Amino acid sequence: MYYCSKCQKEISICPACKQRVSDATALLFYQIAAVCFAVAAVFFLLELELNEKTAKAMQPFKDSAEIAEKKAKVEAVDLPKPPKKVAPASKAQAPKKSPIRGQTADFRTALWGTSRSRINEEEKSQLLNDESAYNLDYLDTINNLDTVVRYTFSSNRLDSGHYIFFGERCANLEQLDQTSLKKIGDSTPKSIQSLFAIFPKLRNKTPADLKSVELFYHEMLTSLVGQLGEPVERTLGEDESLLTIDQKVASVMVFDRTLSYSWDTPKSIVDLVFAAHENTMYLCISFHNRKTAK
Image (cartoon, rainbow, N blue to C red; front, side, top):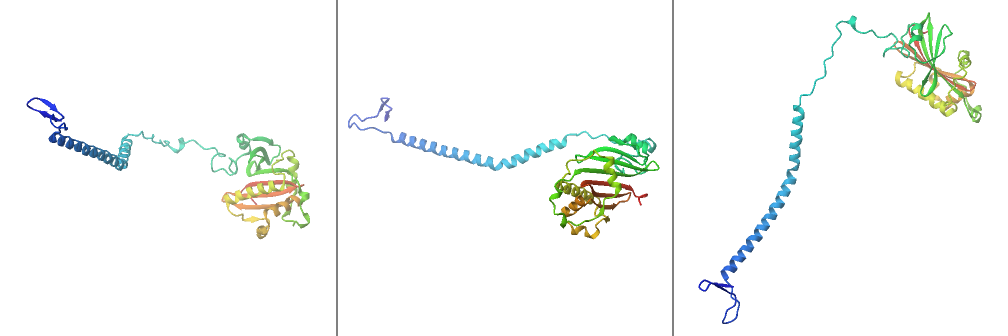
């Protein structure tokens, strides 16, 4: 297309030869403009891609800066300080601790030498028997088992304490090959046999077969060894390691025998006695005043 400046008309076809008329200069300008637009579009796309990559690369630094800023704000907060502990004005004003309470107790919450009347007032378990001049018996629950808690006195002062567990008559003993069992330990003494008559109803149904008795005996012994170390005395002596737990338990339960273990601590002598009477389990953990223990 051609624009005539004289007649002010646009001529797109030559009137003589009928060919299309083109303006080379205008066409050149159109081409240059198209190239510039294409180049601008390419640069725009490259800039977008560059900005995106730069933003991804700078994100960790931006996150670190935000964390540092938040931390600085937290540290700048004036946190309230806990009130200072006020010491008692004098030792005389400090509250006195009960002689049968606290972490220094020798048996339950009592100290050796505590009066019988004081223990009778302080013990919260169910009273079973207070007729004896030497013992106070209570019923408690330990490890989900009924337990006789016995306080023993000398001159009305606490001298020892005992946790006593009774089982049911052991089942299925007739299935054992008793001819191959070896009698170990000592025969159950009459002092233990008499306790079965004193407490005829306190029988726990859980330790009523060999497996459950083995587990209970082993748990109690292991617990004391963990707390007090290896016993200083034991009924079997060096033969203890020659027998398995099931052999020891089977012999005790079948032949009504007794095994005992003893530990020596700075303030107490601790004993564990495992025995049977008429094929019924007896286990007692005792604490004795070291100063008066024989």
